Image 1 (tube, rainbow, N blue to C red):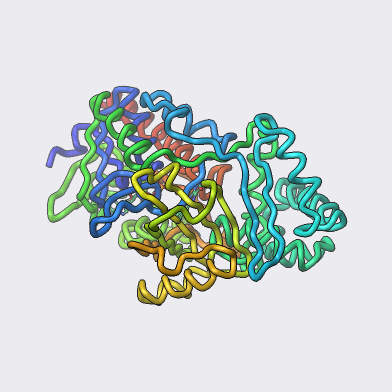
Image 2 (cartoon, helix red, strand yellow):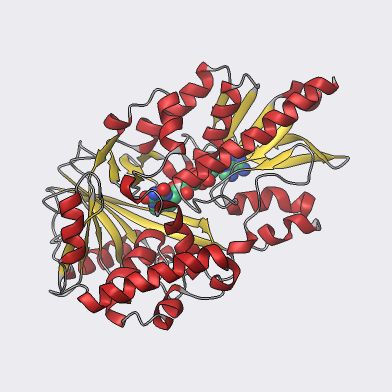
Length: 454
Ligand SMILES: Cc1cc2nc3c(=O)[nH]c(=O)nc-3n(C[C@H](O)[C@H](O)[C@H](O)COP(=O)(O)OP(=O)(O)OC[C@H]3O[C@@H](n4cnc5c(N)ncnc54)[C@H](O)[C@@H]3O)c2cc1C
């Protein structure tokens, strides 16, 4: 081992946080080695073949008001216009013949569709429901700015009820916006995290759009970023799981992977919350700065991805099925998985129920609930895979907002990155990229300092 790794920065984890961190460092000429445990880069935005079937980590949507992620992609030479197909609308379908509605999601690009979506759909939400929801949204965004900790003691349902939002509006709109996007029902979802997810989009509402990937996310997004790192002199190794951080005299100076010690001038732990806790706990269990993040719980996610002998829906569109196990789903045979005749990706709720099931049991529930939503899947499924993340996000229940750590730690030679770390965009692709860029700033400063000291 070279002491201090010759000043090299070691980034642990090749999801968007680690990739953006390593990209920034290599772009500044800082020597960087990224170690990713999986066979491909991308983490929760990965795509790969699972027992012969093309799968993705889970249904993802690219939002038009992101800015750090598109800038990173541009610098890595990715053509956003080719990577994303702007669908710009969502559908909410109620089961058992209930109403459904299509809502435009692009005020600038599809203004009439967007306005009509708000004014129409009165069977889904009455005009009074919409008025109360608007007041609830305005109050929540204000409270998120003024008193986030107080808001974090309440659930979305509790806060909505206190603002006169009807049960129908909770079920038909707030369930899609909570269980649909982050798998947890509104009665378990922190009101502060909910409004924190919406808040960064408000000043950029005119830029709102909703895009589907035109190919697997590793292929069209993450691998090109990794190639950008390598083209700038950095190194990316996959299939290397870091088992341990080496701490000497209060400084992190190496990592251990597969029995090999790899020296580092600085280490950025860019994993999701649970592996970060596993790496940090042995050395920092008693360190008060780490106590809040080490106490954080996690939220699982489970998705099921179906190959079909025909498209399940007429258009590829993000759809929510409140009141069923199908939290959020989309046909993808015209966008992400164009090799397939039909291809349905579904995020399931509540995730804990499905974690415990065998794949065939998951499929049976999905076929039944899909039928209640008007999707005839029986006899049309040619193959399927269940993709689960037992520890996906940090816990989104009340009481967790203040536990998120900064990227800067009080330990020499150590920074953190990842969607659970503190930044405005919460648990999202944009948030992961921003956290990686902040960690890169810290690592680059440490690198420059180390060079001056030598
Ligand atoms: C089903 C689903 C749907 C989603 N939909 C959206 C969406 O529509 N829009 C959106 O913006 N966000 C969405 N997200 C969230 C988004 O994917 C994440 O916020 C983001 O990708 C997190 O990136 P990350 O780099 O912080 O973590 P990760 O992507 O989890 O990356 C961490 C990496 O670290 C690696 N690792 C872990 N331990 C080690 C170790 N010991 N050694 C080496 N490597 C290690 C892991 O293998 C992984 O590759 C969704 C997430 C899921 C699961």
